[in-house]
Image 1: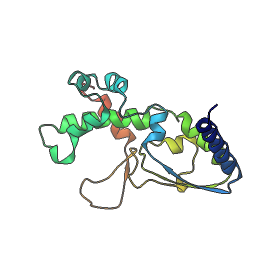
Image 2: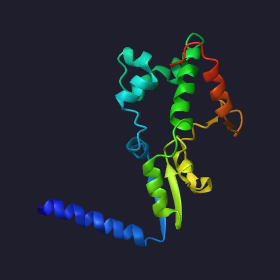
Image 3: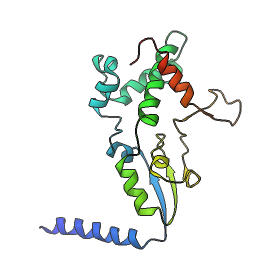
Image 4: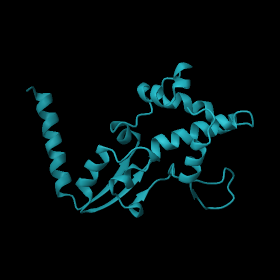
Length: 174
């Protein structure tokens, strides 16, 4: 091994020691956590599998498809396409996957200690892996809930039944 490799592994071992001895954790989790488990918005294979129509149009990432559906581009003509995409997307990201390995690994590290999580992820993976909902702050929301497009109340609505109904009634699924 060379010096830089030794330094790298020494750092990894030191971090592992610190994690083992920590009394509590404040965790910040973003898209990389889900991407490392397979829910990667830049994965061309997922686009080809889940959205072949868009793949054939040359859209190679979920990010590219999402640009079709920014709120200022929604109108009566494309509302069905908008909801068709979002029903499929929410189902693929929130409801179909079981908990991914990176989340189980993290949970096994912190489950018996105090922790709090701030996440930008909306896929529900933390709860699926066993993390307590009361210890998760998700300022970007959760794909499991809808709320009014124009603020009319603070209520959010569980959307699983609505999503499944949309999928069952689609004329041309993605």
